[in-house]
Image 1 (cartoon, rainbow, N blue to C red):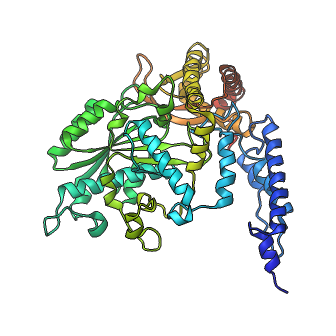
Image 2 (tube, rainbow, N blue to C red):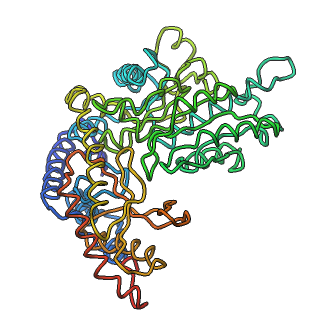
Image 3 (tube, one colour):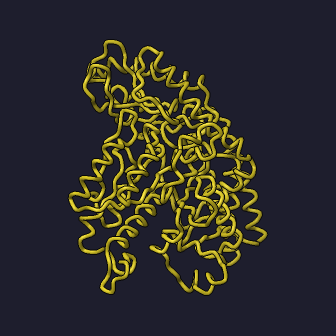
Length: 519
């Protein structure tokens, strides 16, 4: 007997049983999510040890059937998942999501459009091009189509340093007939590996090093410069570094400035950095994966002064734009520089199609198959309007300042870096507690609160100098205060839990009898 009817039922298609299964089980899934949302507990999965003991994959020849398999996924995954919208979930750049984003995901998933050719996503291709144009105008580039949606900041940063490197080599190396060297065609010149450098601050995202390594340049190609006490790139150090590299016979292809560092939320001084890169003929890429949300801000747009001068920009919408993962963009100021990665495939984007105005998005992207993630941002902007969207972004920045002031006024807490954007770096400092145990105490406070499902706060290392003391790297707690619904009262309640948890475990840590929650 043919299994074709079962094939049709299993596939999402115009089949009566398939449609019935889709409607019934989608409703079940929506109801399960609704119930999950209505549970006020931030997290119920327990410790990593507890979670490992209950999660088990059980494939079989016969299959469980859709209803039973969905029930297991709800029990194992949904019910034990972190609620990123919870006001105590503040550890990472991991945002609560818009209702519009969730709705757009249904349309994106149902249609399964691929952005690698117009005939696979006819409407989506045209919509993405228009959204890129709008984003270009928002950053100050002016109208145009040079840009593409990406999986997120790491991929966008890769595109920035890749194009910068190939632009640099084309400018400084020639092939045998005197034409500009093409890395795409001929590979890297033998001496480029040691000569070509990329500069970023020591607080820049790790993707700069990671991407240069993937490009075959190695970590050695990345030169980091120190930061100031405000966690911003030290401009004087940048100028000295570029002068020294030039004196050593090196060529700086690109300076990566950060608009919103991962920990401190620091925004590098873009105008001053642009002046220096102009002096040395280097590309300026701005990693605005986080701080780029300020292009929609009603109050803080000036923090991104000079962003329009960059040669390329990273934006990331699954951070402070509140979109579901994944959703990012890469913007390129001069469309001519896309020539370094242009490619035509007859079956996707032929020269004939381009001559007739068919969008060629695959040539602007490192990906071939690519989701229509732009719909999430499109639907959100059209639904909310720019003013309300900007208000939601501004809320987190306002909250950050209030939280910092509260920490400075609260015994047992210490602010480690003055916040600039939407993150707060602090630690617990019980009166009279041994300084050598503070790192251990703060690490375990965060782990304890997460295992209990009470709070998700980050843990990182921060360079800190208390007045009169030497600078040192200390264990820091981190709150990323980007949530548009978190309030100061929410954060005060969280900080009370932090202090109480520290008090509960500090003596055991001092006595050497404490067992970490993560174990």
